[in-house]
Image 1 (cartoon, rainbow, N blue to C red):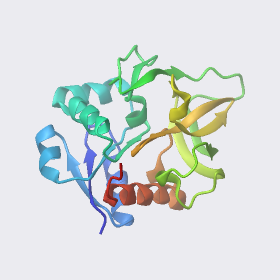
Image 2 (spheres, rainbow, N blue to C red; image 1 turned 120 degrees about the horizontal axis):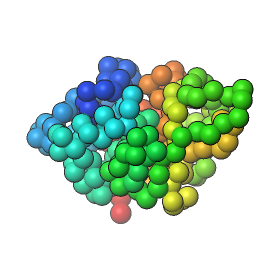
Image 3 (cartoon, one colour; image 1 turned 180 degrees about the horizontal axis):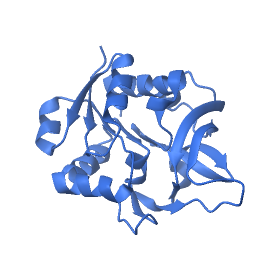
Image 4 (cartoon, rainbow, N blue to C red; image 1 turned 120 degrees about the vertical axis):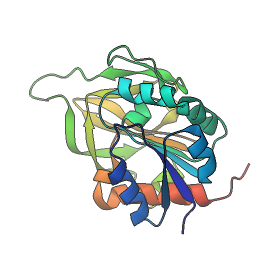
Length: 214
């Protein structure tokens, strides 16, 4: 059994899909809604999922106090996985309603500006390319040609390009995932991406179980 993984319930996320995916790879998900629940969970990994509006996601985190918990967790390089809004929330700001994010990473979240016939949101399967070598999140996956499921109208633009773990194209190139140490986030939904998505969760759970080497 992998280490316990805390999954933040913001009230708007696809909680069941994420917890089921973690269970499918042998992890022990523990839903948390407050900093006290996170502290009591004994979790070695933390997942921030999200579906819907970024404003609601960030408001929920700030209202519960979990915004500070997330920033502290990431600052300690503890295993973290943000999914969709859970990735966008990590940056400074978003064009979606002028939302101020958590500011974990410098950068912004911008709306797709696409020519016809491409439609917004970007919805469905798309092929990504991994841009970091030897990331624990991509163990066993091909550097080129893996496909994952996306549903989003906005995409992240990090100031530090070394954060970029994967890229994708939808009219324009965009960042599909970021990674720094044991902190990861994906714009795509691993829990909706069948076997390849389960590989992402399996690799994340393994990262949470592994001892930190400095």
